[in-house]
Length: 134
Image 1 (cartoon, rainbow, N blue to C red):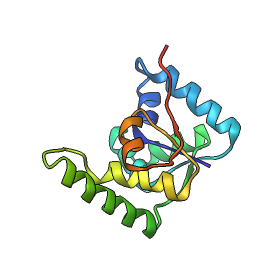
Image 2 (cartoon, rainbow, N blue to C red):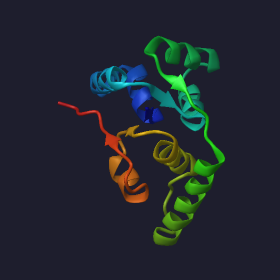
Image 3 (cartoon, rainbow, N blue to C red):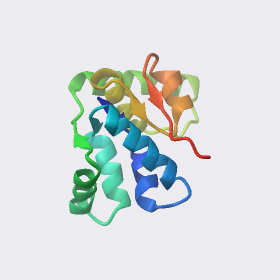
Image 4 (cartoon, rainbow, N blue to C red):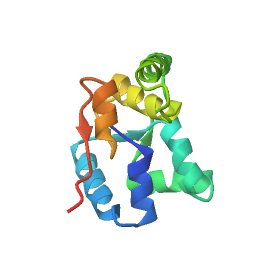
């Protein structure tokens, strides 16, 4: 089971320059098995669209399932954000980024993301899948 980061799904929906790469990556992941979205990433997608019904419709159309965050993932996200603040006191990284990474690490087998460097640094062992832009 692979999680998808909100940014990749928003790329796909925005139909911009990165949409083709996002679509190809998602299709490949869906062929390999289930793709899921956390409640945090779903909220970010909803904020980028018109409303929640549209966000849920998009998930149904693409075959992405909803998998809410468990307490263990929330706790790991908090620990990683605390470490990040200690290393980078002026950083603008927000809790959702850590929550999405922890969800993928502890509840899934990988993450489709454009932010591989960040996730590699804070979520050791997490399989990262990045849409490749040709």
